[in-house]
Image 1: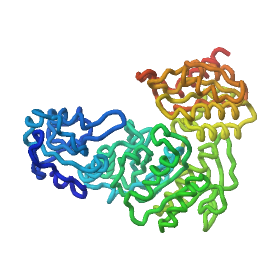
Image 2: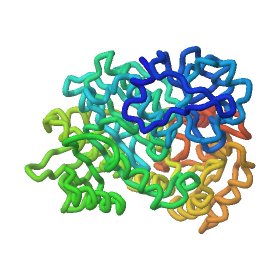
Image 3: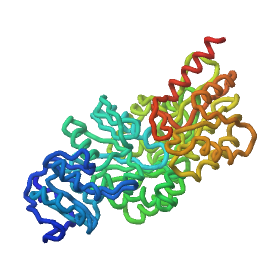
Image 4: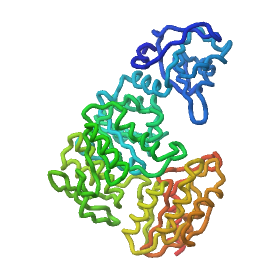
Length: 507
């Protein structure tokens, strides 16, 4: 594809003149790929210089040229001033300055892959908690409807039944559009995609046409990145107000304060909205909820009728997830009979209230809960399932929002019978410093500190009696721990299973 074709729709001004060795090239050159990482540039590629959180791609333009970049898109006016002789060694390179490199990258990637979302319906899901489970529920319903479905999310990327490791919840624009293109070519009729607040703030999915949208909830998380809850909300809102999509429907949980606000703003603007929740004014209302170890049963009261739901998923959070998935699938035209079948077919998602069983007399659960809201919902769900004790193992991640640590310490000690505070992914921080901040919020002396996460899980298992619930929270599906910048293999489910088996063998 020519550079001129790639630049279609982008407000770009090609540089000209001989200042600092610059030269203006011709835009009819062929581009063979798009990269924002100079180390991955190949001959004939277009390199897009992004200003990142930790590094600035503008400082790597010379490296990109050395690796064979045919063209460079950048936004900083002085980006080429330091190239000197390096730029003269690439006499055929074309330099294009844009107002916003991230917006440009999204448009370039969309053009490069032929704007796949125009003809491939994409369902976008955003919110703090529940995105992954909602995505799998929607996928299950659409498959029950006879469709081949692609999935882009936190745990993995999927094309039908085949799965691939996920690098990000929502990948950068070239990878995202490339996945859509691949899914389209392999016969997917729909794509279900989680859309993170980081991706929205960084415009990774800009230009994507979304056919249906879901807002699950908004609670404290990522404030190291967004700084305030209002900034966090505005990032999420972009999906519903700034991205393309004609005649689409937004499905919104109005039991959530931010969801109710978003619903009101969209309705006032004339957008189609399906509301869901436990409140009587919701379009899809959950009632007659029966929750157990085996799953959940409840009724969805729609405007036109009552629909009885049976699901192997457990807990009130999953009632919300099911409502959201049902609303999205209804907006796509799926009949209720198919929706109910797809929901009943959808088993537990890895690392989301995942029960670990080896014949023990207590319930053991691994969950991804790493925010205060998710942890609270997790403990309340467990409390509703047993008359025994709740023993919670958790920690907080390093290099992330420090403000939630003491809050989560307070919440865990208030709602659990006993808490073991341990490490999560401390990353570059001192694990003991993080643990101290978590423990500083404790409201009761019903906790102990065990920095070794494996030992913490073992101690919880040894402590458990009949009908107790052991909750291992924070990492869910993750299969690693990141300590002092090093990733080591660690899987909560396997560690918990091993501890239970040791307990049974010793008995």
